[in-house]
Figure: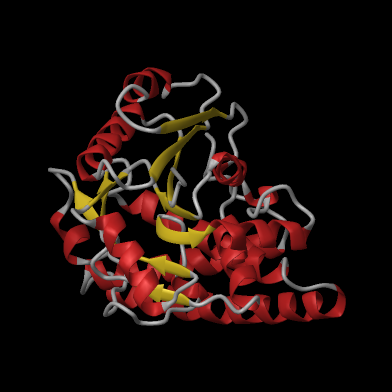
Length: 310
């Protein structure tokens, strides 16, 4: 039987969450559906081995052990192992809602999309500070199904992509895989990919029914993690902007980004101080904006923050 969709999961030291995800995917799977599952274990110690051994007897599972931690290389390994015409990426800390994959496929067919993106809904663990939940710091925008979206909202956490398009991006860039492995520790490999797809005329569409739940553990539900994530996102924004330019255009873009980040950092600092005695939520929003600008400036100075693989 021809494989229509390869559901690809890259995992790093989360065997319990991976096991839960595979359980939900198995419950949703239709026996006659031409679907396979590809899991890339990016932990040098192979911490997913026992989970994958157990599920290999119950699912059409293709497994890869990639001992060098690098999220871009892991995604490339998943694409290389996949046999489906379409690839659905889902993260190892996510769980799809009922009908997830069917909704992605249906939306692609109805809207003739080259890539279909779905919502990632935060699932807060007990004990999460109420003000963090009220502030919506882990919430992401949602749209009516069929809404065209741009590269700013494109991500690999919940997406259906045509495998041939990924192979074309890799070939055009002279790489073995579509994701640039230079970004494998910092992030932004998906942003760079979606810019490349968009430049080739790919049509990105939203599917609001294809939602997944993402666990927000206590290790993330705190001020420090949120500020570090904003700092990293500021860095990866700059890196993804510069990698697409060369020579004078790159220098000019870098200078503009630096001037804008300095101005925005000053505004964010003043507003964070002003809101601190009045609203913790509003102050936090401006502190995150300040951290993002600091990340941009640090990236322009040559510093790289490695969020992945540690």
